[in-house]
Length: 131
Image 1 (tube, one colour):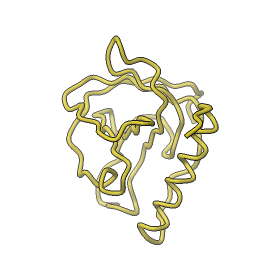
Image 2 (cartoon, helix red, strand yellow; image 1 turned 180 degrees about the vertical axis):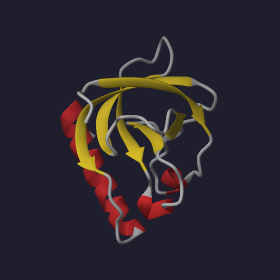
Image 3 (cartoon, one colour; image 1 turned 120 degrees about the vertical axis):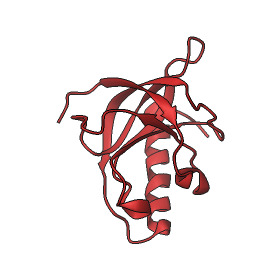
Image 4 (cartoon, one colour; image 1 turned 90 degrees about the vertical axis):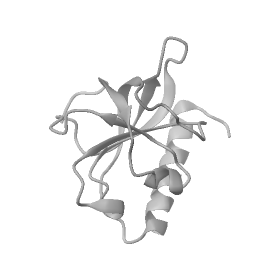
């Protein structure tokens, strides 16, 4: 496992819009699929451009087993408080600061949504976000 914090950057590419359809839009970053980062969910910060630094984020790296286990590992970032993430072709730098949980296959989309809600609760505590 890599020592945290761990920073990497990538260009936002088009994904399958599945996280967005669950209510949690993500920016999919093109990174080396052989990254040494352990698969799982992290808390950290994203920087989009000069004026948007240190945005609290939930980061997923791994194979989205519940949605489509046939794809290679994905690197997705959900920026807290953002309902839309139209960042295609934009360079985003992400710092993974805290490991939250391991990647796993959930029994259903409902179970996945429950886990995401728990991730959001943990993220709000971590970042001291009141809403």
